[in-house]
Each structure stands twice: as C-alpha cells, then as structure tokens.
Image (cartoon, rainbow over all chains, first blue to last red; front, side, top):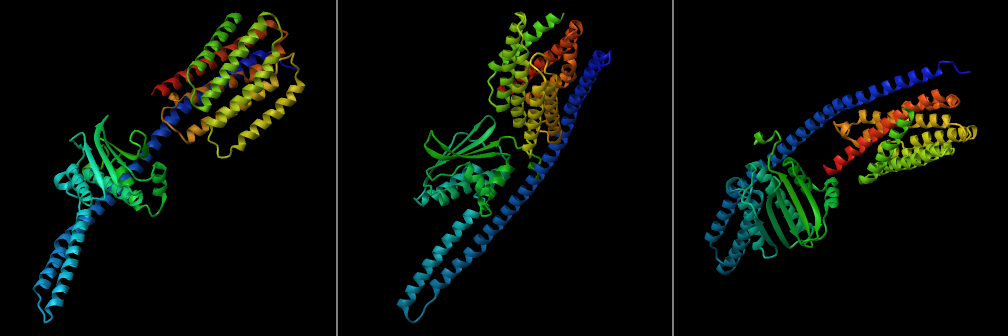
Length: 273
Length: 210
C-alpha cells in the first residue's frame, strides 16, 4: 500500500537527487581543473629536470670532445711530425734498406697523421662555435663529398638560424649523427639536405637513398641499449624542444628525416649556456 | 501545458537527431552517441504518431530500454579506461538478468518501471565511474570543453533524475492529472538531456575545427 503523498515524495526525491547530481557535476568541473593544474606543474618540473640532465650530459660531452680534439691536435700530431722528422734524419749502413724502411715509416706516420686529423675534425664542434651552423655543416659535408663515395647536396633556403651557439651545436650534432647513421646502417650514398623556416619552425629535411628506417624503427632503436647514437639524437631533439620524423617521402621516392625546431627556445635552460 | 511540453520535447529530440547526423563522427564513442540520438528520435516520432492515433505504444518503451542499454554499454566501454574490462560485463549481465526477470513480470500494457529503474541505475553507476576516472586521472584542465563529459552529464542527469519518476509512474496511470504532472517533469528532464547532448555535439564540432 503506497502512502497518499507518494507523488510529493517522488517529486521531492527527484529534485533532491537532481540537486545532488548538479553538485557532483560542479564539484568535478572545478576539482578536476585543480588536479590537472597540479599534475601539469609536476610534469613540467619533471620535464625541466630531464632537460637539465640532458643539457648537462650534452655539455659535458662537448667539453670532453673539445679537450680530446685539442689533445689530438696539439699533442699527438706534433709528436708524430717529430717522429717523421727524426726518421727522415736517421742514417745507417744499409742505405737502401734503411731508405725503404724510412719511406714505409713515413708513409704510415703520414697516414696516421691524416687519420688523427680526421678524427680531430670529427670530434671538434666543426667550427660551429667560430663560423656558425651553416659553415660547419658545409665543412662536414665537403669532407664527406671529398671521399667521392658520398654525394650530399645542401639547399639552404633561409640564411638565418635563430638559435644560440649551444643550440646550433646540438642541431649540428643531430644532423651529423643522422648522416653518419644513414651511411653506416642504411647504406645511403646520396643525400639532400633542405633547410628552411616555416610557421616559426626551423625545418631540416634530410632525404637519402638508403634503406628503410621509419619512426617505428627509430622508437625501437631508442629502447635498445645499443642505440646510444639514437639516444643522443633524441636527447638533443628534446633539448631543442623539437620533433623528429622518419618517413618515406612519396614526392621524392626516398626516405626522409624531418627535424622541426621551434624558433623560440623558451625553456629556462637557455641562460645556462 | 503538458501537450506543449511534449511538443517541445519532440522538437528538441528531432533537433538533436539532426545535429547528431550532420556533425561528422570520427570516434567510436561519438558514433555511439549519434546512434543513441537517432534511435531515440525515430522512436520518439513513431510513439508520438501512435499516441496521436491512440494506438498503444508501450512496447516501444520496452524496446528502447534494451537498445539504449546496449548502445550506452559500448559507449562507456569505449570511454572508460578500466584495467579490468570484465567489471562492465558483470554490470551488463546483472542488468540482463534483472531486466529479463522484470520483463516477464511486467506486461507490455503497463509502464516498464522496474526494467527502467534497473537501466537508470546501470547508466547512473557507469557515469559515476567516468567522473571518478576523470578525477583520478584528468586528461585536460578544461573538462567542460570535452564533448564526452557533456554526453555523460546528459545521461547522468536524465537517468538519475527519472529514476524515481518512472519507478512510481505506473501507480498514477489511473489518475490522469497526477500522471500528467509526473510526465511533465519527465519530459522536462528529457529536454534537459537533449540540451546537454546538443551542447556536447557543439563542443565536439569545436574540437574538430580546432
């Protein structure tokens, strides 16, 4: 048997329920906003910390490379040159044999000097600190083109690189590593590098005739403990707040790597350099 | 007054059906809400026509309960990132068991109060799970810009609000005045649901444009 005022009770119950539900919805909208703000701040702090670590790692790597380059250039090369000079000056009884030995030694040492000089060039910032990104990239490319095994064409559409020296070096290292990787692992022989600025983004499109390497392979490579080169690329891209995509470009029928970096490097780390 | 409310409700329902079809749905959850709206609009039109010609239309209320539950089950399954998906299966099975029991108990000549009540609890619980998830793991700071939030809110208000109305409505079928009062409140909640769902589609259109 239902009470006589059941209709009023149903209405009151319904309105109370609606009132409570409205309260829940309003609470969710405001509280969720608050939680999201806290979560975002936490993630931002984590990102800044990661960037700080990445920057410190890269900076220490660069310092180490510089000192190694200086060491090779200032110490080992003069020593080898001295040895060459000494061997040249040495005389013995078996003149013919000694001459042969000398020539052989000279050749080896000369080759060694060349190798060490090449190594020094590779380790050194390539002149980014002195001549800037474009000149350094050109030097690197010219050195590779001299081998006549590799053909790299650079197309710089915008003679402007709105990055400080440290970030230019990071970008240079990324391009350098990508080219070396494509030669080593994708057996690429021909490259085309396009540099341009679009929608406040610095864009570098690197196309090559090597074998398949797409974003999926890149991500797998990052997880691989042996993928130090890829990890360095990723760290530098993160440092630059940029993005990197590896895809087959139908337009050119080649594999391409697109690097995009925001023109404004607004992370708090710029002033550390 | 009740007739005017019925007309407005149906106009909103048709408007909702049109909007849901016009806006391109790219996600599964949007497609399911569209299906829900189109199905409701079609049933709304058919039941209104039957009502005008004084032909019994209660069978459609039974039909709508089952279809709504199945559509909304898949909608919530898509939007809730539950670790244990079988939790939702348990809810659906509970509904199906109780729904079937009540179906045999209730005939098509009276309002399906109990089945509807179970349906309301089912949707009400799923909406609460969604809100809980959003609080635990917020995906954006602007939940009010998320169309899914508005769809869930529409369902939450409608099914929560009508829970008791439909449970007791069948006791007033003999009293035309009191039944009309209940039905007016029910229709007002229907209008509220349609407005919130329309707003959800507007939000979705904005996100598509963005």
